[in-house]
Length: 250
Image (spheres, rainbow, N blue to C red):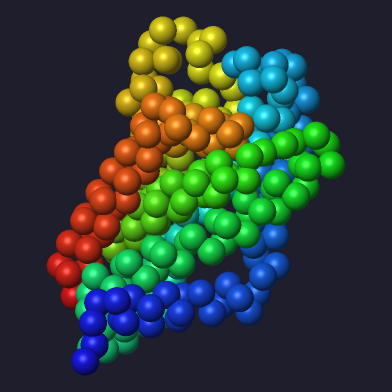
């Protein structure tokens, strides 16, 4: 008998297969984060936010940024499936509707881990150091955030299936404010008060702060707890809203 877990594994395998057949897509998706790392990091002060070095502060933010770019665009895959009729063929299968969303969202974790490993490997020769346990916990938190963001991206794709421009307009409008207000590229702590206030309403801020603390080995801290709560909240919201949208669409 089919269960939600087995259906989710089926969808996850189907979604992951093209990624495994074309691993170069993961490498090429790193071009933008690596460009930021190469051209932006030298512009930062030597000891941003008191973290000891530019790389120790910047690399965890770049890892989150690469995940943000990748997962926020995953809904475009669903738009393609909607256009070609592939999604409708999936709907006539006995697969449970929530599994269509959860399996797709879980797939986003695999490229995320691969990208994080590549970024860390590239920066190690330049002096970046990290705590192994902290990094593993950080990636688990980031995975939860990616699942939620991916689910929200699929929900946006379903809502804009008759007007594809709407998906890209909303995605681009939200992407850069979220990125900049999270303090990934520049410390928000040194900005004006209104900017710091807006940053506190951005869930990504807490995820980025938690990544920096965890990569530095500060595992048992309120910063990490806030990042975990923020990522779990985004995941719960994304799966709840996305599952409802998937059921209504079918």
